[in-house]
Amino acid sequence: MSDLQKLAVRHLWMHFTRMGSYEHGELPVIVRGDGCYVYDEAGNRYLDGLSALYCVNIGHGRAELGEVAQRQIAELGFYTNWSYAHPRSIELAAKIASLAPGDLNRVFFTSGGSEAVESAWKLAKAYHAACGRPRKHKIISRYLAYHGTSMGALTATGLPPLREPFEPLTPGGRHVPNTNSYRWPADRDPMWAADAIEEAILFEGPDTVAAVILEPVQNGGGCFVPQDGYFQRVRDICDRYDVLLISDEVICAWGRIGHWLGCQRYDYLPDMITTAKGITSAYAPMGAVIATDRIAEPFLHGTASFIHGFTFGGHPVSSAIALANIEIMERERLCEHVRSREAAFREMLDSLRDLPIVGDVRGVGYFCAIELVKDKGTKETFDDQESEELLRGFLSGELYRRGLICRADDRGDPIVQLSPPLIADTEQFEEIEAVLRPVLTEAWERIVKRRPAAGLGSH
Image (cartoon, rainbow, N blue to C red):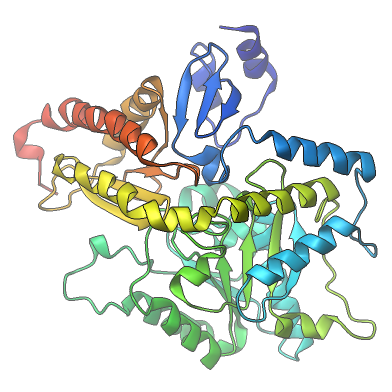
Protein backbone atom coordinates (compact mmCIF):
# COMPACT_ATOMS: atom_id res chain seq x y z
CA MET A 1 0.00 0.00 0.00
CA SER A 2 1.46 3.35 -1.04
CA ASP A 3 1.91 6.29 1.33
CA LEU A 4 -1.00 8.10 -0.31
CA GLN A 5 -3.24 5.09 0.17
CA LYS A 6 -2.22 4.77 3.83
CA LEU A 7 -3.00 8.42 4.44
CA ALA A 8 -6.34 8.10 2.65
CA VAL A 9 -7.37 5.05 4.67
CA ARG A 10 -6.38 6.80 7.90
CA HIS A 11 -7.80 10.28 7.27
CA LEU A 12 -10.00 10.63 4.15
CA TRP A 13 -13.69 9.93 4.69
CA MET A 14 -14.90 9.09 1.20
CA HIS A 15 -18.46 9.59 -0.02
CA PHE A 16 -20.88 6.68 -0.55
CA THR A 17 -17.95 4.33 0.12
CA ARG A 18 -17.59 1.17 2.17
CA MET A 19 -14.49 2.32 3.97
CA GLY A 20 -13.79 -1.17 5.28
CA SER A 21 -13.19 -2.37 1.74
CA TYR A 22 -9.83 -0.57 1.74
CA GLU A 23 -8.49 -1.58 5.15
CA HIS A 24 -6.31 -4.21 3.53
CA GLY A 25 -6.99 -3.72 -0.19
CA GLU A 26 -5.83 -1.28 -2.84
CA LEU A 27 -7.54 2.09 -2.92
CA PRO A 28 -7.70 3.65 -6.41
CA VAL A 29 -5.80 6.94 -6.33
CA ILE A 30 -6.28 8.95 -9.52
CA VAL A 31 -3.48 11.48 -10.00
CA ARG A 32 -3.80 12.85 -13.55
CA GLY A 33 -6.28 13.33 -16.38
CA ASP A 34 -5.94 13.89 -20.11
CA GLY A 35 -8.90 14.05 -22.48
CA CYS A 36 -11.05 10.94 -22.02
CA TYR A 37 -8.46 9.24 -19.80
CA VAL A 38 -7.23 9.34 -16.21
CA TYR A 39 -4.12 7.80 -14.64
CA ASP A 40 -3.52 6.28 -11.23
CA GLU A 41 -0.45 6.69 -9.03
CA ALA A 42 1.16 3.63 -10.61
CA GLY A 43 0.82 5.14 -14.09
CA ASN A 44 -2.03 2.87 -15.26
CA ARG A 45 -4.38 4.48 -17.77
CA TYR A 46 -8.19 4.24 -17.57
CA LEU A 47 -10.87 5.31 -20.02
CA ASP A 48 -13.15 7.52 -17.95
CA GLY A 49 -16.45 6.13 -19.16
CA LEU A 50 -18.33 8.00 -16.44
CA SER A 51 -16.86 11.52 -16.89
CA ALA A 52 -15.80 11.19 -13.22
CA LEU A 53 -19.44 11.39 -12.12
CA TYR A 54 -21.34 12.57 -15.23
CA CYS A 55 -19.61 15.91 -15.04
CA VAL A 56 -16.20 16.31 -16.76
CA ASN A 57 -18.01 17.08 -20.00
CA ILE A 58 -15.16 18.75 -21.91
CA GLY A 59 -12.65 16.12 -20.81
CA HIS A 60 -9.69 16.16 -18.46
CA GLY A 61 -6.55 18.28 -18.54
CA ARG A 62 -7.88 21.53 -20.00
CA ALA A 63 -5.01 23.76 -18.87
CA GLU A 64 -6.73 26.91 -20.11
CA LEU A 65 -9.27 26.58 -17.31
CA GLY A 66 -6.42 26.71 -14.81
CA GLU A 67 -5.17 29.85 -16.51
CA VAL A 68 -8.66 31.36 -16.29
CA ALA A 69 -8.77 30.54 -12.58
CA GLN A 70 -5.35 32.08 -12.03
CA ARG A 71 -6.36 35.34 -13.74
CA GLN A 72 -9.60 35.50 -11.75
CA ILE A 73 -7.81 34.91 -8.43
CA ALA A 74 -5.38 37.71 -9.26
CA GLU A 75 -8.31 40.03 -10.01
CA LEU A 76 -10.81 38.95 -7.33
CA GLY A 77 -10.49 35.65 -5.51
CA PHE A 78 -13.80 35.89 -3.72
CA TYR A 79 -16.70 38.12 -2.95
CA THR A 80 -20.18 37.16 -1.91
CA ASN A 81 -23.45 37.55 -3.82
CA TRP A 82 -25.24 38.51 -0.59
CA SER A 83 -26.27 42.11 -1.33
CA TYR A 84 -23.24 42.49 -3.64
CA ALA A 85 -22.40 41.33 -7.13
CA HIS A 86 -19.21 40.80 -9.07
CA PRO A 87 -18.57 40.73 -12.83
CA ARG A 88 -18.21 36.99 -13.40
CA SER A 89 -21.45 35.91 -11.73
CA ILE A 90 -23.30 38.68 -13.59
CA GLU A 91 -21.82 37.60 -16.92
CA LEU A 92 -22.47 33.92 -16.24
CA ALA A 93 -26.09 34.52 -15.26
CA ALA A 94 -26.62 36.47 -18.48
CA LYS A 95 -24.91 33.75 -20.53
CA ILE A 96 -27.04 30.99 -19.00
CA ALA A 97 -30.19 33.02 -19.62
CA SER A 98 -29.20 33.41 -23.27
CA LEU A 99 -28.90 29.63 -23.66
CA ALA A 100 -32.02 28.68 -21.71
CA PRO A 101 -35.40 28.39 -23.48
CA GLY A 102 -38.40 30.64 -22.98
CA ASP A 103 -38.29 33.14 -20.14
CA LEU A 104 -35.91 31.18 -17.91
CA ASN A 105 -33.99 34.38 -17.28
CA ARG A 106 -33.19 34.38 -13.55
CA VAL A 107 -30.19 32.46 -12.19
CA PHE A 108 -29.66 31.68 -8.49
CA PHE A 109 -26.22 30.16 -7.92
CA THR A 110 -25.40 27.38 -5.46
CA SER A 111 -22.34 25.25 -4.70
CA GLY A 112 -23.65 22.03 -6.24
CA GLY A 113 -26.58 19.87 -7.26
CA SER A 114 -28.14 18.99 -3.90
CA GLU A 115 -28.08 22.68 -2.97
CA ALA A 116 -29.76 23.52 -6.27
CA VAL A 117 -32.58 21.04 -5.62
CA GLU A 118 -32.93 22.25 -2.03
CA SER A 119 -33.10 25.83 -3.29
CA ALA A 120 -35.68 25.05 -5.97
CA TRP A 121 -38.05 23.40 -3.51
CA LYS A 122 -37.66 26.30 -1.07
CA LEU A 123 -38.26 28.74 -3.92
CA ALA A 124 -41.40 26.85 -4.96
CA LYS A 125 -42.74 27.12 -1.40
CA ALA A 126 -41.78 30.78 -1.12
CA TYR A 127 -43.32 31.62 -4.51
CA HIS A 128 -46.66 30.08 -3.66
CA ALA A 129 -46.67 31.77 -0.25
CA ALA A 130 -45.93 35.13 -1.87
CA CYS A 131 -48.86 34.55 -4.21
CA GLY A 132 -51.24 33.87 -1.33
CA ARG A 133 -51.09 30.05 -1.42
CA PRO A 134 -49.11 29.19 1.74
CA ARG A 135 -50.48 25.63 1.99
CA LYS A 136 -48.73 24.60 -1.22
CA HIS A 137 -45.55 22.98 0.12
CA LYS A 138 -45.35 19.36 -1.09
CA ILE A 139 -43.10 17.99 -3.81
CA ILE A 140 -43.74 15.04 -6.13
CA SER A 141 -40.90 13.00 -7.61
CA ARG A 142 -40.37 9.52 -9.04
CA TYR A 143 -39.41 6.13 -7.66
CA LEU A 144 -35.66 5.45 -7.82
CA ALA A 145 -34.91 9.07 -8.78
CA TYR A 146 -31.84 10.63 -7.20
CA HIS A 147 -32.16 14.33 -6.43
CA GLY A 148 -29.46 14.74 -3.80
CA THR A 149 -28.70 13.97 -0.17
CA SER A 150 -29.32 17.15 1.84
CA MET A 151 -32.44 16.71 3.95
CA GLY A 152 -34.86 18.45 1.61
CA ALA A 153 -33.38 16.98 -1.55
CA LEU A 154 -33.37 13.57 0.13
CA THR A 155 -37.14 13.84 0.56
CA ALA A 156 -37.39 14.10 -3.23
CA THR A 157 -34.92 11.25 -3.77
CA GLY A 158 -36.83 8.03 -4.41
CA LEU A 159 -34.24 5.52 -3.19
CA PRO A 160 -35.25 3.94 0.16
CA PRO A 161 -31.72 2.78 1.13
CA LEU A 162 -30.52 6.40 0.99
CA ARG A 163 -33.54 7.74 2.87
CA GLU A 164 -34.17 5.26 5.67
CA PRO A 165 -31.01 5.90 7.75
CA PHE A 166 -31.93 9.60 8.07
CA GLU A 167 -35.66 9.48 8.71
CA PRO A 168 -37.71 11.38 9.65
CA LEU A 169 -37.05 13.48 6.57
CA THR A 170 -38.36 16.90 5.63
CA PRO A 171 -42.13 16.36 5.34
CA GLY A 172 -44.02 16.78 2.09
CA GLY A 173 -42.56 14.25 -0.32
CA ARG A 174 -44.64 11.96 -2.54
CA HIS A 175 -43.32 9.48 -5.12
CA VAL A 176 -44.88 8.25 -8.33
CA PRO A 177 -43.91 5.65 -10.99
CA ASN A 178 -40.99 6.32 -13.29
CA THR A 179 -40.82 5.78 -17.06
CA ASN A 180 -38.99 2.43 -17.12
CA SER A 181 -41.14 0.88 -19.85
CA TYR A 182 -38.78 -2.13 -20.10
CA ARG A 183 -40.65 -3.54 -17.11
CA TRP A 184 -44.14 -2.39 -18.11
CA PRO A 185 -46.84 -4.72 -19.46
CA ALA A 186 -46.93 -4.55 -23.24
CA ASP A 187 -50.46 -3.12 -23.29
CA ARG A 188 -49.87 -0.33 -20.74
CA ASP A 189 -50.94 3.16 -21.79
CA PRO A 190 -47.73 5.07 -22.62
CA MET A 191 -49.04 8.04 -20.62
CA TRP A 192 -49.56 5.91 -17.49
CA ALA A 193 -46.58 7.33 -15.61
CA ALA A 194 -47.52 10.90 -16.49
CA ASP A 195 -51.12 10.40 -15.42
CA ALA A 196 -49.89 8.98 -12.11
CA ILE A 197 -48.62 12.49 -11.31
CA GLU A 198 -52.15 13.89 -11.67
CA GLU A 199 -53.49 11.13 -9.43
CA ALA A 200 -50.89 12.00 -6.79
CA ILE A 201 -51.75 15.71 -6.93
CA LEU A 202 -55.43 14.93 -6.52
CA PHE A 203 -54.76 12.52 -3.66
CA GLU A 204 -52.56 14.99 -1.79
CA GLY A 205 -54.84 17.91 -2.58
CA PRO A 206 -53.91 20.43 -5.29
CA ASP A 207 -53.88 23.23 -2.73
CA THR A 208 -50.99 21.49 -0.90
CA VAL A 209 -48.68 20.54 -3.81
CA ALA A 210 -45.99 23.08 -4.66
CA ALA A 211 -43.92 21.33 -7.33
CA VAL A 212 -43.13 18.27 -9.41
CA ILE A 213 -39.42 17.53 -9.91
CA LEU A 214 -38.30 15.29 -12.78
CA GLU A 215 -35.07 14.61 -14.66
CA PRO A 216 -35.29 14.70 -18.48
CA VAL A 217 -33.60 11.27 -18.40
CA GLN A 218 -33.77 9.66 -14.97
CA ASN A 219 -30.39 8.64 -13.61
CA GLY A 220 -31.44 6.40 -10.70
CA GLY A 221 -32.38 2.95 -12.00
CA GLY A 222 -30.35 3.46 -15.16
CA CYS A 223 -31.16 6.15 -17.74
CA PHE A 224 -34.95 5.93 -17.98
CA VAL A 225 -36.09 7.94 -21.00
CA PRO A 226 -39.57 9.51 -21.21
CA GLN A 227 -42.31 8.24 -23.47
CA ASP A 228 -43.25 10.44 -26.43
CA GLY A 229 -45.47 13.21 -25.10
CA TYR A 230 -44.69 12.48 -21.44
CA PHE A 231 -43.38 15.91 -20.56
CA GLN A 232 -46.09 17.69 -22.53
CA ARG A 233 -48.70 15.78 -20.50
CA VAL A 234 -46.91 16.59 -17.24
CA ARG A 235 -46.70 20.27 -18.20
CA ASP A 236 -50.46 20.32 -18.83
CA ILE A 237 -51.14 18.62 -15.49
CA CYS A 238 -48.94 21.08 -13.60
CA ASP A 239 -50.63 24.05 -15.26
CA ARG A 240 -54.09 22.65 -14.48
CA TYR A 241 -53.39 22.51 -10.74
CA ASP A 242 -51.03 25.49 -10.40
CA VAL A 243 -48.09 23.23 -9.58
CA LEU A 244 -44.55 24.23 -10.59
CA LEU A 245 -42.49 21.94 -12.83
CA ILE A 246 -38.82 21.64 -11.84
CA SER A 247 -36.51 20.03 -14.41
CA ASP A 248 -33.61 18.48 -12.50
CA GLU A 249 -30.73 18.75 -14.95
CA VAL A 250 -27.77 18.31 -12.64
CA ILE A 251 -26.69 15.59 -15.10
CA CYS A 252 -28.72 16.21 -18.25
CA ALA A 253 -27.66 19.81 -18.99
CA TRP A 254 -24.51 21.14 -20.70
CA GLY A 255 -24.44 18.77 -23.63
CA ARG A 256 -24.85 15.45 -21.81
CA ILE A 257 -27.89 14.56 -23.91
CA GLY A 258 -26.95 16.76 -26.88
CA HIS A 259 -28.41 20.14 -25.90
CA TRP A 260 -27.46 22.98 -23.60
CA LEU A 261 -30.42 22.16 -21.37
CA GLY A 262 -32.04 18.74 -21.19
CA CYS A 263 -35.58 20.11 -21.46
CA GLN A 264 -34.69 21.27 -24.98
CA ARG A 265 -34.21 17.64 -26.01
CA TYR A 266 -37.83 16.85 -25.14
CA ASP A 267 -39.35 20.24 -25.99
CA TYR A 268 -40.90 21.30 -22.70
CA LEU A 269 -40.59 24.50 -20.70
CA PRO A 270 -40.22 24.06 -16.93
CA ASP A 271 -40.69 26.74 -14.32
CA MET A 272 -37.25 26.01 -12.88
CA ILE A 273 -34.14 24.10 -13.90
CA THR A 274 -31.67 22.76 -11.36
CA THR A 275 -28.16 22.22 -12.66
CA ALA A 276 -24.54 21.65 -11.56
CA LYS A 277 -21.78 19.21 -12.64
CA GLY A 278 -21.20 20.01 -16.34
CA ILE A 279 -21.75 23.75 -15.85
CA THR A 280 -18.02 23.92 -15.03
CA SER A 281 -17.17 20.43 -16.30
CA ALA A 282 -16.39 19.94 -12.59
CA TYR A 283 -13.21 22.01 -12.78
CA ALA A 284 -14.72 23.95 -9.86
CA PRO A 285 -17.80 23.37 -7.69
CA MET A 286 -20.95 25.15 -8.87
CA GLY A 287 -24.68 24.68 -9.18
CA ALA A 288 -27.65 26.85 -10.08
CA VAL A 289 -31.39 27.23 -10.16
CA ILE A 290 -32.62 28.78 -13.41
CA ALA A 291 -36.10 30.27 -12.90
CA THR A 292 -38.64 31.93 -15.14
CA ASP A 293 -39.44 35.61 -14.87
CA ARG A 294 -42.84 34.65 -13.42
CA ILE A 295 -41.24 32.79 -10.51
CA ALA A 296 -38.87 35.68 -9.76
CA GLU A 297 -41.50 38.41 -9.98
CA PRO A 298 -42.82 38.30 -6.35
CA PHE A 299 -39.30 38.77 -4.99
CA LEU A 300 -38.22 41.76 -7.07
CA HIS A 301 -40.11 44.66 -5.50
CA GLY A 302 -40.33 46.62 -2.28
CA THR A 303 -39.06 44.80 0.82
CA ALA A 304 -39.54 41.29 -0.60
CA SER A 305 -36.65 38.83 -0.88
CA PHE A 306 -36.00 35.12 -1.23
CA ILE A 307 -34.62 34.47 2.24
CA HIS A 308 -32.09 31.85 1.25
CA GLY A 309 -28.46 31.65 0.15
CA PHE A 310 -25.02 30.04 0.33
CA THR A 311 -21.65 31.62 1.03
CA PHE A 312 -20.06 30.26 -2.13
CA GLY A 313 -23.00 30.60 -4.53
CA GLY A 314 -21.71 32.31 -7.69
CA HIS A 315 -18.08 32.15 -6.50
CA PRO A 316 -15.94 34.36 -8.82
CA VAL A 317 -13.46 31.60 -9.67
CA SER A 318 -16.19 29.03 -10.32
CA SER A 319 -18.10 31.57 -12.41
CA ALA A 320 -15.03 32.37 -14.50
CA ILE A 321 -14.39 28.67 -15.07
CA ALA A 322 -18.03 28.09 -16.02
CA LEU A 323 -17.87 30.88 -18.60
CA ALA A 324 -14.68 29.42 -20.07
CA ASN A 325 -16.19 25.92 -20.04
CA ILE A 326 -19.22 27.12 -22.01
CA GLU A 327 -16.92 28.97 -24.42
CA ILE A 328 -15.00 25.74 -25.09
CA MET A 329 -18.26 23.86 -25.67
CA GLU A 330 -19.37 26.52 -28.15
CA ARG A 331 -16.01 26.67 -29.90
CA GLU A 332 -15.77 22.89 -30.28
CA ARG A 333 -19.50 22.48 -30.97
CA LEU A 334 -19.77 19.72 -28.38
CA CYS A 335 -23.57 19.64 -28.28
CA GLU A 336 -23.58 19.08 -32.02
CA HIS A 337 -20.83 16.47 -31.64
CA VAL A 338 -22.92 14.49 -29.15
CA ARG A 339 -25.96 14.61 -31.42
CA SER A 340 -23.90 13.51 -34.42
CA ARG A 341 -22.14 10.64 -32.60
CA GLU A 342 -24.82 9.37 -30.22
CA ALA A 343 -26.10 6.90 -32.83
CA ALA A 344 -22.65 5.32 -33.10
CA PHE A 345 -22.31 5.19 -29.32
CA ARG A 346 -25.73 3.56 -29.00
CA GLU A 347 -25.02 1.15 -31.86
CA MET A 348 -21.95 -0.08 -30.01
CA LEU A 349 -23.96 -0.64 -26.83
CA ASP A 350 -26.81 -2.27 -28.72
CA SER A 351 -24.33 -4.73 -30.24
CA LEU A 352 -23.99 -6.20 -26.75
CA ARG A 353 -27.62 -7.35 -26.80
CA ASP A 354 -26.44 -10.69 -28.16
CA LEU A 355 -24.97 -11.46 -24.73
CA PRO A 356 -27.34 -13.52 -22.54
CA ILE A 357 -26.81 -11.23 -19.54
CA VAL A 358 -27.84 -8.02 -21.39
CA GLY A 359 -31.57 -7.42 -20.98
CA ASP A 360 -31.98 -3.81 -22.06
CA VAL A 361 -29.97 -0.89 -23.43
CA ARG A 362 -31.40 2.60 -22.96
CA GLY A 363 -30.55 6.28 -22.75
CA VAL A 364 -29.79 9.16 -25.10
CA GLY A 365 -26.81 11.30 -25.99
CA TYR A 366 -23.75 10.30 -24.00
CA PHE A 367 -25.84 9.00 -21.09
CA CYS A 368 -26.73 5.32 -21.40
CA ALA A 369 -27.23 2.19 -19.31
CA ILE A 370 -27.22 -1.57 -19.82
CA GLU A 371 -29.60 -3.54 -17.61
CA LEU A 372 -28.35 -6.99 -16.61
CA VAL A 373 -30.72 -9.95 -16.24
CA LYS A 374 -30.61 -13.64 -15.39
CA ASP A 375 -33.12 -14.54 -18.10
CA LYS A 376 -33.74 -12.41 -21.19
CA GLY A 377 -37.06 -14.08 -21.95
CA THR A 378 -38.65 -13.49 -18.55
CA LYS A 379 -36.57 -10.40 -17.69
CA GLU A 380 -35.80 -12.05 -14.36
CA THR A 381 -33.45 -9.92 -12.33
CA PHE A 382 -30.91 -10.82 -9.67
CA ASP A 383 -31.64 -11.15 -5.97
CA ASP A 384 -29.70 -9.05 -3.46
CA GLN A 385 -26.98 -11.64 -2.87
CA GLU A 386 -26.49 -12.22 -6.58
CA SER A 387 -26.32 -8.47 -7.25
CA GLU A 388 -23.70 -8.10 -4.56
CA GLU A 389 -21.63 -10.89 -6.08
CA LEU A 390 -22.17 -9.69 -9.64
CA LEU A 391 -21.57 -5.96 -9.21
CA ARG A 392 -19.25 -5.53 -6.26
CA GLY A 393 -17.73 -8.97 -6.17
CA PHE A 394 -16.79 -9.05 -9.84
CA LEU A 395 -17.91 -6.40 -12.33
CA SER A 396 -16.75 -3.16 -10.70
CA GLY A 397 -13.27 -4.42 -9.94
CA GLU A 398 -12.79 -6.30 -13.20
CA LEU A 399 -13.87 -3.40 -15.41
CA TYR A 400 -11.47 -1.13 -13.54
CA ARG A 401 -8.68 -3.70 -13.72
CA ARG A 402 -9.10 -3.83 -17.50
CA GLY A 403 -8.95 -0.05 -17.81
CA LEU A 404 -12.58 1.11 -17.93
CA ILE A 405 -14.27 3.32 -15.33
CA CYS A 406 -18.05 3.11 -15.46
CA ARG A 407 -20.82 2.56 -12.95
CA ALA A 408 -22.10 -0.85 -11.90
CA ASP A 409 -25.14 -0.12 -9.73
CA ASP A 410 -28.15 -1.89 -8.24
CA ARG A 411 -30.17 0.87 -6.62
CA GLY A 412 -32.85 -0.36 -8.98
CA ASP A 413 -32.23 -3.50 -11.03
CA PRO A 414 -28.53 -4.17 -11.78
CA ILE A 415 -27.09 -1.93 -14.46
CA VAL A 416 -23.83 -0.80 -16.01
CA GLN A 417 -23.95 2.92 -16.75
CA LEU A 418 -21.80 4.82 -19.24
CA SER A 419 -21.40 8.58 -19.54
CA PRO A 420 -18.12 9.42 -21.30
CA PRO A 421 -16.76 12.93 -21.84
CA LEU A 422 -18.52 14.73 -24.67
CA ILE A 423 -15.30 14.68 -26.71
CA ALA A 424 -15.42 10.85 -26.94
CA ASP A 425 -15.61 9.33 -30.41
CA THR A 426 -15.18 6.06 -32.31
CA GLU A 427 -11.84 5.17 -30.70
CA GLN A 428 -13.32 5.39 -27.22
CA PHE A 429 -16.50 3.54 -28.23
CA GLU A 430 -14.37 0.66 -29.51
CA GLU A 431 -12.33 0.62 -26.30
CA ILE A 432 -15.49 0.48 -24.21
CA GLU A 433 -16.82 -2.49 -26.18
CA ALA A 434 -13.45 -4.24 -26.04
CA VAL A 435 -13.68 -4.23 -22.25
CA LEU A 436 -17.42 -4.64 -21.73
CA ARG A 437 -17.96 -7.62 -24.00
CA PRO A 438 -15.46 -10.04 -22.40
CA VAL A 439 -16.21 -8.87 -18.85
CA LEU A 440 -19.98 -9.26 -19.27
CA THR A 441 -19.40 -12.64 -20.89
CA GLU A 442 -17.29 -13.74 -17.94
CA ALA A 443 -19.86 -12.34 -15.51
CA TRP A 444 -22.49 -14.60 -17.09
CA GLU A 445 -20.20 -17.59 -16.82
CA ARG A 446 -19.26 -16.87 -13.20
CA ILE A 447 -22.50 -15.61 -11.71
CA VAL A 448 -25.32 -17.08 -13.77
CA LYS A 449 -24.38 -20.07 -15.88
CA ARG A 450 -22.79 -21.98 -13.04
CA ARG A 451 -25.99 -21.85 -10.97
CA PRO A 452 -28.42 -24.78 -11.19
CA ALA A 453 -30.34 -24.62 -14.45
CA ALA A 454 -33.65 -25.10 -12.66
CA GLY A 455 -33.11 -21.81 -10.87
CA LEU A 456 -32.96 -19.73 -14.04
CA GLY A 457 -36.16 -18.16 -15.20
CA SER A 458 -37.99 -19.00 -11.97
CA HIS A 459 -39.40 -16.59 -9.38
